[in-house]
Image (cartoon, rainbow, N blue to C red):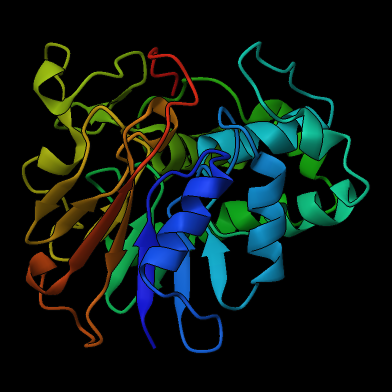
Length: 284
């Protein structure tokens, strides 16, 4: 079975369909995982969600910041942004089924020895800790009090992880790291204002994956979220958000069949060009 990881789609369903055709994807024998941000900013978020739900079992998506934003808007606890393209979902006859399917999605996965997240991992976390912490938030999102949690999800504090955190503050740090992180200090304090490339880190900050002594460094990690970073391949790192919605490309990585993996040397990259759906501005 071929397993593909796909970068941020953000409502670009035509590009996703073209990419799947390019790799000859068959749901009877293959599987793919979107690395978060299935929806928003692009022209057809409704079609993306319907495609993913119909392929459930052969397809999955991590929850990204835009997917969580959709859930918050649908719950009435977040005001839509002017640049949102979520109305078709919110007005769809199958809205309830789609949103329920979406909130069941994971915040992190382990596939063939690869840790998959939407944005980043704090330096104090091991790969197994990431999965455990993601599961905590997933349980809340799948519970009856999801709307109440979504009211508390937004905010930039606490900026760093502490094992003594509990309740909404604890879950907020987890969500911020897994769905919004780009830069942090060497001791794990997060920064969210900067959306430029890795070379433009604010003073005192570095890309999360370059923190010395990062405890997850022994595990290959694939992520999206950072379109200004673009495609990045290192022996234990794979970044796949290549800015499809901005007129860049949609990228997929076919993982080797072996587990544990043999670094990115065995990863095959497939890319297709995307028509520009948003003017440059690089909202997060």
